[in-house]
Image (cartoon, rainbow, N blue to C red; front, side, top):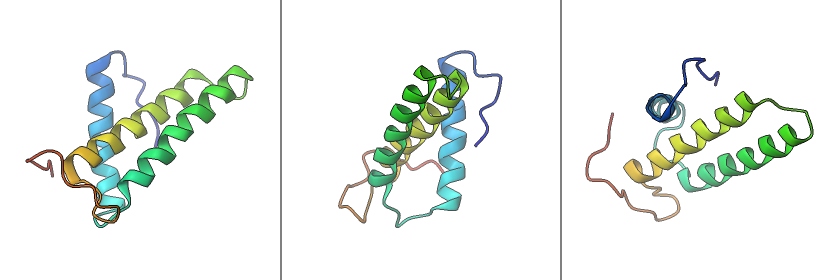
Length: 95
């Protein structure tokens, strides 16, 4: 997923994460192991940070993983994870 260059603030970050959540929902509809995907994305943030420290990544690489992790947090809150027994945490699911 390419990160838009226009991410300048929190609102842009959240808008990008919402867009990414919708894209991911289309690619991986329920039932989907959302919890496991969230953990995987969090690990990608760590990897991107370590790669950045070693000169193998740029800040945009970290931001990309942050957007994807936020997207999975949104999906977990909105959809839950029926495979792992996590209920929907929000009443309204944004389609």
